[in-house]
Amino acid sequence: MPRKVKNQFLKHLREYFNVFLPRQKNCSTHTINSSSQTWNLLLKHVSATKKVNPEKITLSMLNRTMVVGFLDTMETERAWKPATRNQRLSCIRSFFHYAAGMEASLSIYADDLSRIPLKKAINTSRIVEFMSREAMKVFLNQPDTETRMGIRDQFFMSLMYDTAARNCEMLSMKLADFNESDKSVYLLGKGAKPRLVPVTAKTVLLFQRYKSSFHQAGKVSDPMFYVRHKGKK
Image (cartoon, rainbow, N blue to C red):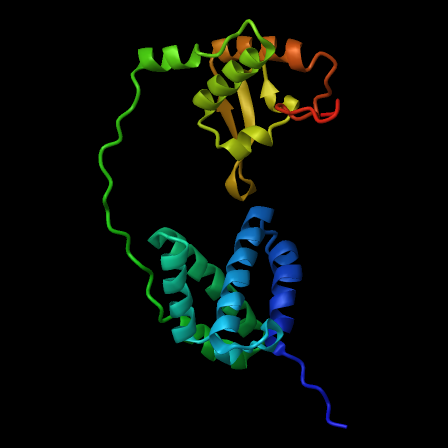
């Protein structure tokens, strides 16, 4: 009985996501998810183009022409900008460099993809207008602080304004991350990069008011912002 030949591509791809990225490179969940999404889209494209099941895809199918076709399709169907296209190309190349390191004979594929040029973005930017200090002051005073939700909203807006934090950074913040005495906030940013950001004395006062309303018996490990579902946080 003939011996079944294993698909080396799928073997390397599985080890790339299960071992190399999380354990050896210690990549963040965000980075791994982004790379995984790229590969899911690419394999779906190859499967449709070659009319084969995903488990039948081989490295030889993932040549320069196929990858460029995939990137062009995503630009059209998903409105990828040049920056997104280039980032996804980097995700694909990263795997091929890994595979070449595992098997020298696979370096031919990595070399083939290295010839795909990055796409330069057309600069259509203009000077970004910003709100005046008075306008921002009016904006931050819009929440009705006679209500609990208004207290929360004003603190959330003021904290975001002080720290320039992203939504995901705000929502991942813990109660312990706000240091009242030092007037600072600990943020965990993109790529799991921490930073300590100062806040104004007014934001500290808003935090104290927010805490007395939303965290009366809260633990320092509790999320800073939360919602209740069926009476539970």
